[in-house]
Image (cartoon, rainbow, N blue to C red; front, top):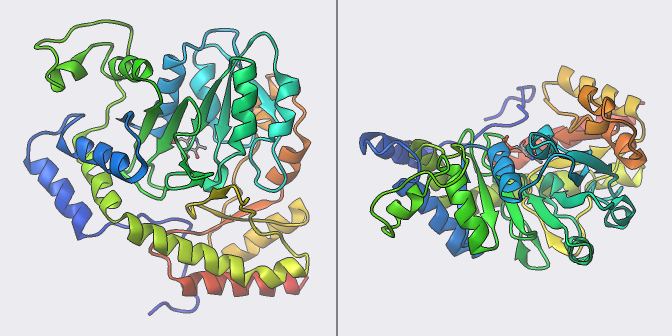
Amino acid sequence: MQKINSVIPFNKPWITDLEEAYVLDALKSSRLSGDGPYTHKVEEAFRRRFGIERFLLTSSGTDALELAFLVAKIEPGDEVITPSFTFSSTVNAFMLRGAVPVFCDIRPDTMNLDEKKIEALITPKTKAIVTVDYAGIPCDMDPILTLADAHQLLVIEDAAQSVGSTYKGRPCGLLGHMGCYSFHETKNFCMGEGGAAIFTTQEDLREAEMIREKGTNRKEVLKGLVDKYTWHRVGSSFLPSDLLAALLAAQLERYEEIFDRRMAVWQTYYDGLAQAQEQRWLKRPVVPAYCTHNAHMFNIQLPTPKDRDELMSKLKERGISTYICYVPLHSAPLGLNLGESSCPVTEDLGARTLRLPLYAQMEPADALRIVHEITDILGRR
Ligand SMILES: Cc1ncc(COP(=O)(O)O)c(C=O)c1O
């Protein structure tokens, strides 16, 4: 039984006997390096559930993005259009190759790239657009893909947060030319640190397989296509140990249970905060009709930055951990050195958004308690 004033953490991975059994089995098998039986189990799970054929498990979502930009052959001086309202990894991945971010503003409803503001930022140097499915809600991809097609640009989908979400019936991760997932401890399905890169052409997949395996064609030996492998191109090592893949394989077997429990918490917040929205004390998330979401996050927008910061500290006093989402990249210390960007919506929402606790083991009663605390705090002002 939950004590009334007990602390509610921001996030907590849900580990059961199944995760323990799979990890122990992997440990005992002495097959600890990458691309082993549990990695294949994970690939198979994504093939069966989402129809994803070209899926490479990586050691993080960050690595998946770096791998994608290596395959994309992004070069020094290339420009990449990206939201500023994202995690640093989205932008590091191409800046490591010498490419330059061009920050595009976001939509006030979904806090995703504003598809209407992209075209004005395209120059002869633009090579790619990186879309971020913030809070597990995809961008409006069709107009973005049409624009990319017209200007011959690559679209790389940062789907770190959107495993299990869909856009017009298509799974997130498969919406652009390449996609990247994260299985970090804070994500819906976790392996501690981990991710995946998804490709839509066989050519890109083969290239990525070699980069992920130190520039060699080792994957072809594992597939039984050749009997020895050697160095073919400059590469790196982005493979996670099969031990971690075992953890993720167990999480994916519990997909429905994890998904449904997160959704129950999300819906409790959504319904419970309806009245606070009617009073104009806050705004709840917007899920456009073109998509379904995976209950990755629950954000609220407060009327002013001061309201957000006060609510955050008062919830903390009441044992509830919340988080501010992102400091927009263009206004972070590194971003300020990159020159001017015009992202007024990003700046405004970056200062007014608060992310509430959400994890699968949370009880809807915990969410209800948070709803009551928020309503009480905002009603007393
Ligand atoms: C939008 C976004 N991109 C990339 C990443 C990086 O993923 P990872 O932490 O697995 O490296 C994250 C993770 O927090 C993310 O939220």
